[in-house]
Image 1 (cartoon, rainbow, N blue to C red):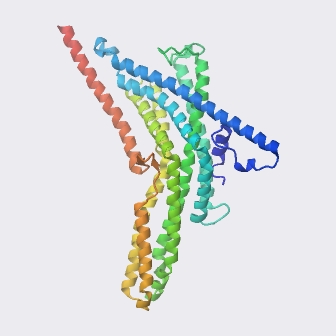
Image 2: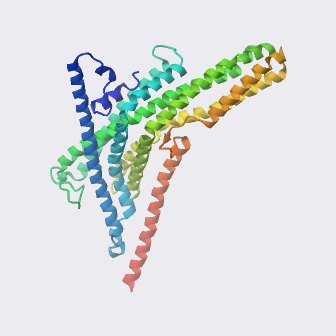
Image 3: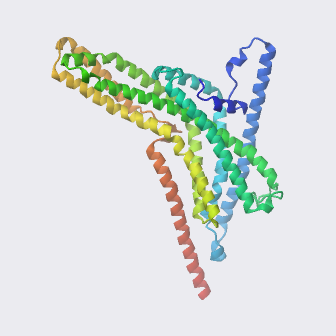
Amino acid sequence: MQLFAVQELILKVCGFLPLSPDRYTLNSPRTRTLQYVLQTSLTFVAVCLLLGSFYDTVVHTVAVLYVFLQTTLEDPTARPSKSYKPDLLGVLSNLPFCAIHLRGLLVLYLFFRQRYNWSILKFELDRVIAKCLPVQSDPKDAVKKWTKISFFLSVFTFSLHTIWEIVEVVYYLAKEPENYGTYTKVFDPLPFKIRTDEYLTIYQLFCTIPYILSQQIYTLLIVPSGVLYESIDLLLNDIRNAQYGHAEITTVSGRWQRTLELSDTVDEWADRYRAIVEFVERLNESFSWILFAAYGLDFITVLGFAAGMASGAKELKGFFFLLTCATIFASYGTAYLIPMVKLHEKSLELPFALRQLRANVKMLASEGFLDRDERFAEREELLSKLDFLQATTHRHPCAVDAAEVFYITREVLVRTVTLNVSLVVLIKQLIMDKDDKHDVVRTSTLSV
């Protein structure tokens, strides 16, 4: 399957996916040795990226914690109110740099631990496609469409984050051009002395590259969700076609005969839905913690950039830069999750469609038909199958979860954006009230 051709190539080159198993079936011992050495070398590259990302993340986290402790322990009343900086918003505005580092590290580590499960998951996806999607062309239309989307997502995420990193570096160097070639102040006052050009090199190696790789892993969850959505949509269309398929038949007995023929079709629907649900469960087992880490840290990143805007950007250029940053990272937690949301919502339509089909079957039974006693068992069997399938689709909707903490639904996305904005507004209002109290206390002290 070429659904994940670009993502697999990138992850294999960086050592986060094993080479194809068929490469080890070659008869030549020398070739097998070369393949083993190549696989070991690529795995070593992945381990180096993880260790470097871990070190870089720890250093930035310590720097953010130091700023938090410094601004929290200092007495703000001892300073003039005009020089007093809102400590909480200041700390939040520094969180994106820590969250971006941590996001790449956690996603890569979680995927690296279970990298050998990916081939099994991809094989199961092939089985779902073979069972649930009709062979309309070669390749199938839905698979062909999502292959193009997968390629676009891979290239787009790579390009978008690379461009953002370049703009970020240019923006901060333009603010303080004299710092390039000198010791950077990123880690002040921690005892880390490093030149700006050296810091940028380390940053690109152990922050930018891990984050881009984590985005490729992110798309490995998005694309199967889209394929499953196509499968659910096709199943729903089949149910609705069966519901209205007897309309062209004029006689009651003819419509009833057509309805009874649905018994085998309902069994097929149940098999298809069972295959989809089982794959969703397998997908959740492999990617739920990855999704939780990516979604949660993207939320913190957006919150940090929004706090930077709320704390008052001194220049219009800085405000629009932070707004662009918040928009880009907010899209990772909203627009990128649309296939998962559509999968969940489409699966929720199945119980209602089956309920309507069952109502039609009962209505035809009440109208009367030929050989009533002889067909009674067939009718009851069909109704029983429809009841069971309806209950199954109602109790087991297709939903991608994040570490079993929450499911990716429309409500979660809306509440996340609302919570982000509300937190920033609330914190800003609390700090403004705190500033007003300090001004009153200071004015009273001076008057005395």
